[in-house]
Length: 301
Length: 286
Image 1: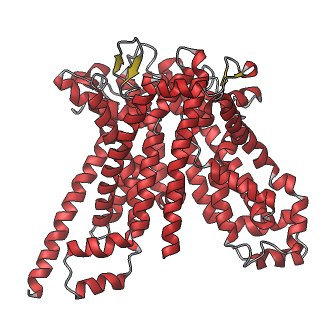
Image 2: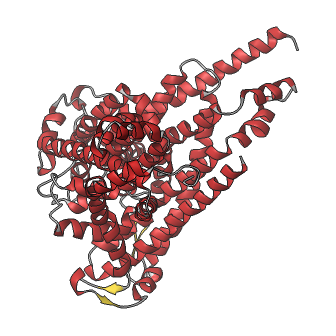
Image 3: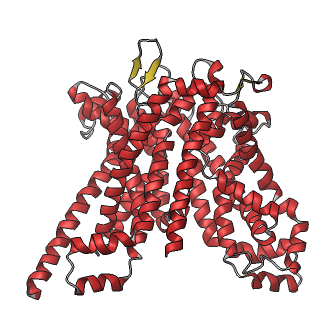
């Protein structure tokens, strides 16, 4: 892109450069404070044992070993992966269905769209408390609570996330559906294709880019989930293992890292930072795969 | 197949779809309605009769709201004011400075600019847990731990997405306009503020909405950076209502939740077009 069109001629570029301290300075300073420095310090600390940052000393891969050997971390990983996949499938199927129905020219579509999107604006903590009241309102009739059984916590969080995210994905799907070329749909109709055939053979191949975006978005959202997890169950119920260690059965990765950092023992902060680095690699890896997917598709088109 | 029956079938199909959507719509609104009815209910009835309308002895009137004001040993009004302060100042800082930096990056396009740009894109895939510990220590050390200074932290951690979106937009603006301004004797400052800045409006709105929604609802960053005995935002306040014993006055909690989501819903209904557009534009991040 740069080669086709020089970014700015010299008439423009040289004078701008004299003002770099004003244009670039503030963001650069804040970016170093808020991201660059904490990021690299975090990587460094993941190889150290420390109570206070200033007396950190290098211990090699010890933190990573204890992070990977931690049963609560392993549990959180599998729990999070299962959660991410289940929520990914449910959210996308439902969001696509709703988006498909809303693009059929039904009266009141705008109102429905407005309502379905609304939960996105409510913060995770507040959502968690709203739903914990609702689930406990139902479960208390059966003499139980969402905090007592991990399967309630799991499905409760799935329902909460569906309620919040369907509207968001729906917006992306609607944009994709509206971009399906009208003449293709017309041609399918003339050739006598049924609604079902049109959906599978014409519409879905055309909205594949939206499907890719939404798939990865819901996957990474599932992996990064924190606020809703903390507010809905906070990891309860807890399970005490034979070795004396506690596994919080509904605790996801992000919450596990948080609890390792700010839990009872400050000695585990190195382990927590190692977990955070592993978590970063996982999430960034998903992001890179997504990028590769979308790039490939753009080239094809 | 004659035309009459297909039309009738089509109409029937649409009616069925309308009904299905209507039902989903009602289900969607129910959680919010549950909050509304329970905010007027006496605490003990919230758990036992969650879905019943308050009446007779379960009717609490506005007592939950009155109680909520000082509930949790922290004034609710303060948390609202701190949330407002942090959201407004952070969003303003982000919009002003990242758009300036994005213009510089897109126009100068030196090696250093590209490095900054790619670092910004990279920061978008880094989860907050990766930096939360070191970031909160750094913020403490630099005294960025008050509601007046925390916007600097938001500017730093939120710069990635904003720069990414602004650079994308600036690249689509034809250079000729700025060149004409330069030839007419405008310095970079005037070129930026009187020529470029007004053109950035659509992206400003999208980025602004994304940042407002992020900062307003954010829990983890402020809880780690701020001294929560002194400063609480709304999400922090709601999370800390529970206290250390796990028992909480649910009626008062619901009253506060209602008060905190009402302005958001009104804001949404007033400018939903921009909000939906802005959120969709930020879909790259998630």
